[in-house]
Figure 1: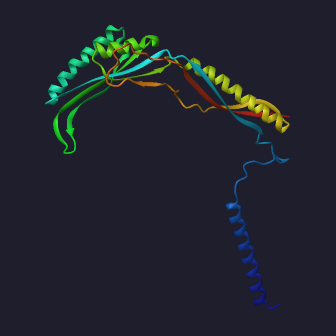
Figure 2 (figure 1 turned 60 degrees about the horizontal axis):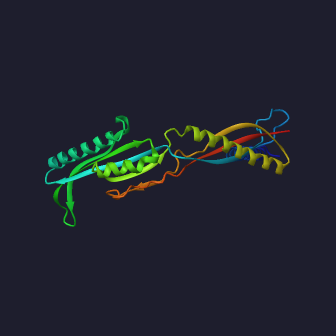
Length: 250
């Protein structure tokens, strides 16, 4: 074979090998990762099979705290006058709240506003409005109706609403969490039994709970009824959701 021809053939072969090597390198880079694989004889196992389940539980408790929102407002020709009238009304309302036995620490301002009052559709200003909203904590939920009557009829409160909650929800949450984990274990045992395997120890527990719980909210409008206000308290549902990972024995 002529040397020039051998050189051409050899160059072509080398080029083919380089191209093949480059192709294999590209394939190696673009190959998807293997997430789960059986352990090889030369390397220890890195994947522990298991059962992953979720669990839910609801614990119902009677609320022990009422959150009262009550406000006063005024409308005058000037901002200063509106603010002065508002101060007098708010002072009366706060005094009434304290007379009912609400402690200073349980009285807070949730909103305060002073601004022009616009008249549609022209948008002209016919005076100024001022308003203040208070947030009160009432610890005797069974007598909250009488408290509302007093705040409206004697304190001059308007824009009043109420919601119920638990002063310390941790105990109810802990109870619900225990039940939720039990629910997850029951589901895992059923899955393991169906798969013909034995459930092992807990590997991980995750709390999937969304903070908070449902509470009825009562809007009493601008004033309470002349007769005694009736506020059914009911119960709150404290819900907990968890995810539990179990190992498989055997």
